[in-house]
Length: 353
Figure 1 (cartoon, rainbow, N blue to C red):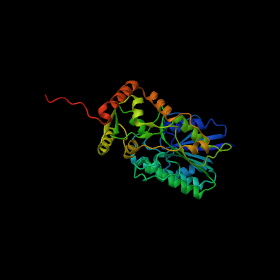
Figure 2: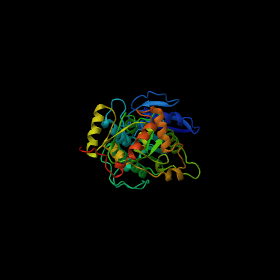
Figure 3: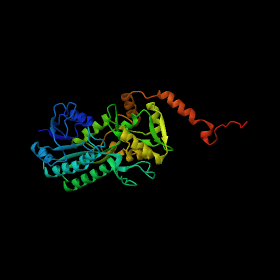
């Protein structure tokens, strides 16, 4: 008999894509797709169950369907439909607690895959140049999605201690982008003009949606020979991009803002509904974040198909051109940067006469 895989968070496009992909694997007999709201997209041959993982009923779902593999994708930073930050936090934290409690009681569960984020490392001025999976953050996230992921991973570690017979894989994804990406950072890059923090040009990493799906699929099965798919892994495309490079490739101008005023700008954008410019996103766009993916390549045995630059290029193609042609914007920025007074001199002044 094949595997019975339960997937949470299937109403989001990433969850729907994974459900359609995993059911094509010959090792999989059934896929149980779960979410609190019905998805707008097709789920192929999966069995959809409208269930809220914050409720104890999720334990009955696992038991009734003899689920042996759980893929928890319902850990996210953005609400569905009219939900707010409160409902997102409840789903992330309370929902994960309920799901793990159900897994702990089910002897049939043998594998757990959890979608996490490199947000667990935070973003601070004294951060190391590169985070490994064992590098502690300089300062723990104080709120938002980053704090949610820290709490979620804490509950997962507790579950792993109580159920050592279950193979547990935590995947810390960098910022997920692609033609159909739905995230606060994707919303930010879709603004006609990008607010930035004056004096900062952070390093950013991205991972393509296609690579996310493939890594999740690898983690959901038995490991290939010579690899190990239990543990914690950073997942990101090779290389980094500076925020200034991103704006030029988008063809969107930037508006540098003094750091103390950025919080006000973020509040204004949230009020207008333009984007969720949260404090944690402000910190990312100030200090950046880069993680090591050596464990992903050497232990998990996966090499991403897309680099960070290629991932961003796919995102740009999916969103369409910006206000300015990227080549023209890049040329203008380079010309301005080469002006003498920006290199330490002074701007020309007119004579008093």
